[in-house]
Image (tube, rainbow, N blue to C red):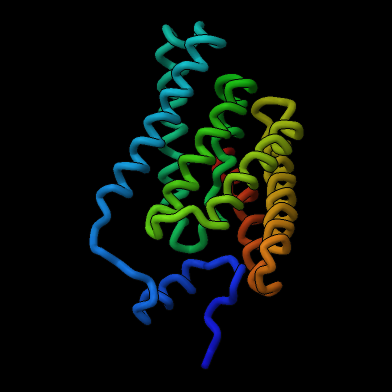
Length: 212
């Protein structure tokens, strides 16, 4: 008689696993088409970055160091996010990319990379369930808003204190966004507060990793 999830409530990973254990969630083994779809979307996102660089920052193309930095930052952000995903998808440091690119490459390019990485990471976050959910939507919104907030705070390069402040600002922005989305979705208030706390930790984690 216990209610696992109510209608309109954000489904957490723990709730999804509980529903799966009860046989409510239908599984058909390895869904190859799902991974093909994710791979195709990631390829399109990468192509969008290449086209942007070719049109607006062509001086980066012959610069192997900056191209390598962009690739390395992308791998670090995605890899770190996948490592902490099992703890909570809201903890994934999606704004780490905009912090690193803005300081090591270019601020304008950092905005583009933030959009691309946030969408890519949200795809990986929901790949296990195979559907677009509120978790994915929240991660994207947090990255968009939090990334811009962090970029506004991060006016000077190579200053650890400013980077930490930017992380705190991103964390606060993430918390507010997550809380607002949870209320719009009529989710359980306690669950929303927990998700908001994890989202705040995402910004702080991103700033710590940036200065590490």
